[in-house]
Amino acid sequence: MFSPDVMGSVRFYTDTLGLRLSDHSGDGIAFLHGAHASDHHMLAFAKSDGPGLHHSSWDVATFDDVGLGMQQMVDRGHTQGWGVGRHVLGSNYFYYVRDPWGSFAEYSHDIDFIPADIDWHAERSSAGGFVLPLGTAGARLLHHEPRNAPRRPA
Picture 1 (cartoon, one colour):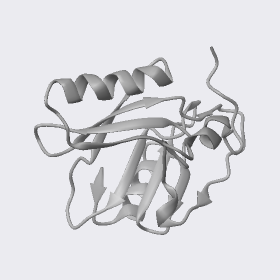
Picture 2: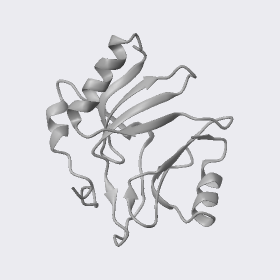
Picture 3: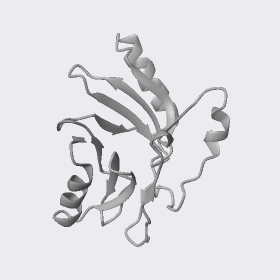
């Protein structure tokens, strides 16, 4: 979600709802996960002049489903988007397509899972480190391991 005060939004959701900070980049973007085991982020905030929705995320079963979803959108005339790629923070594969309201819908697969009993240390990342595009250099990304969380239980 967009927020003019990212860290103020983080304080609200951590103090009142018990979410926990996963990772952030200064006061420009922050990712929050649930206290009782959840994906790397259930909610994220990106700095903006006003509130709004950047994107919703839809978890798909396989990496192939990310590409198939992309192709399905293109075949139906929805050609504005980006990906397929892999996020650095969260480690998930993605494809974003612009929705009719000007936001995005994300096909997502294989995001880091944070168990309740792990002591997760939020990292600060550079602004440019959120996306790794797949392509000619993509083969090295297929072997990327999450930094300190086990994969989601099967």
